[in-house]
Image 1 (cartoon, rainbow, N blue to C red):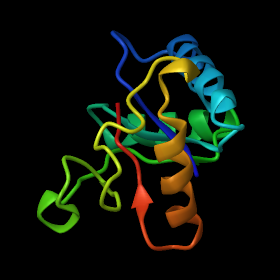
Image 2: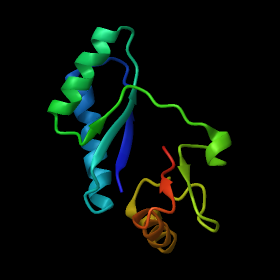
Image 3: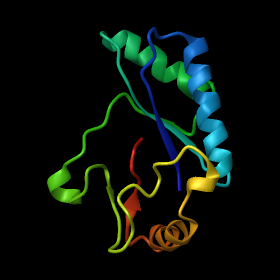
Length: 123
């Protein structure tokens, strides 16, 4: 499993990226220290995008990309994920570990490990 976050601050600074990363690291620890992926941010130029991709990588993120697109016709969900029947669409929409449906999480985690299902709701 991997924890993904998006970076859309008022202004792009190394401090704002670090603040978002700190939050992602906190939530990742709640999920057993999942690798962290910066999946989306916005800039106006290719040079600026390349610079921030490099900065994010240098901060130790496991993966970084500029932007992603989801084909909801393929996933049949509201995002870039496919859940097995019986797993709620908002499984990973939480702000504290006490809100996690651990029974559903454990069931989903097994299907990811065996390669049958993948992805997660992006919040």
